[in-house]
Length: 464
Image (cartoon, rainbow, N blue to C red; front, side, top):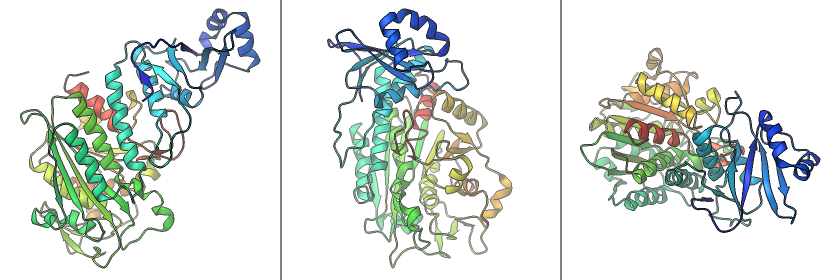
């Protein structure tokens, strides 16, 4: 976590933030020797530049860190997260950060998120710097967000040999049990008994049985918020097998489930006044003698029959059964998260997940909150004219479109067939991975959209 709430007895080193327009006043305050050292070190008040200023006794007196003005077009509220990788061990505090409490909260969050390390198989060898929680920032809120992100990152980063269906089930149930819940798990052939045929069809070929985890938190008369997360622990592509290069990151194909659990943690830890339901369909899309096949026609919980045009479009199948279950109780807000299509990455890249909804007010809230929380998303349309691309000659619909275009849009249109009854529904086609290191976003598994949605729910239900 690397965040402390109370001032320790040990020395605290100030981090002074400097923009170009502040440099003259900061330079004047530094005085002769410190200013001379900064200049000799080549420091300039440019975004991302830093300088460690020594005290006369050789200890660290101060850190200078360059930022843009808070109103500058290129201002990056997460840039201070870079400091975690630059500073020696010790305790630090922010000074003169432009932008007020909100900027301080974002900078502290970026610091904590940058400090994340995946240590399941390799111990961390170096001690990291610690930050004094900035004045006015809610340390408890910051902690629950970081804990949720860390939970999801750990799940995504864990390889499939240790994060198969049973392990993901265990993690989901452990989260529910932490808050006094008794999760329900339906597994194996019981999925057929309780009418989840698509989940069963996708996962039946794997060594570990497919399953559905379901838990509910909060009073029954509160607004109903339901989260559905795609839990494909590894995706070979099934009989439409992926090339080896496309399998390298398939341990992250359960990032939708991880995101739903991260958001659930934040909601439950904060005790938001909602009736939260979490549904995690969990499978491995494997190749075996009983794999589902291209051309098969599979029943669904909703009663629609789906022709299998491609077995590598399995995520939408397991989501369909879970969404149909969710919609049966007519939730006020139904959200699903899935690493669903490569088309979304082609359109918007790894950092900007598309989302789909017919609720105009909700769409505006999501877009605005995403930018404010440094957790950006971009709305794409549920384009009605493309719905016919899912037509089948032998079934109610196909699981893939009839052509190579608009893959993310048609996947969302497929899911829309299964959400009838929900007052508002939104689908997030996330990537769940950082391909490179950025402030607040270390390389590896990532939790996209959870932070923005937690902030949105706080605001919507009066706790912000």
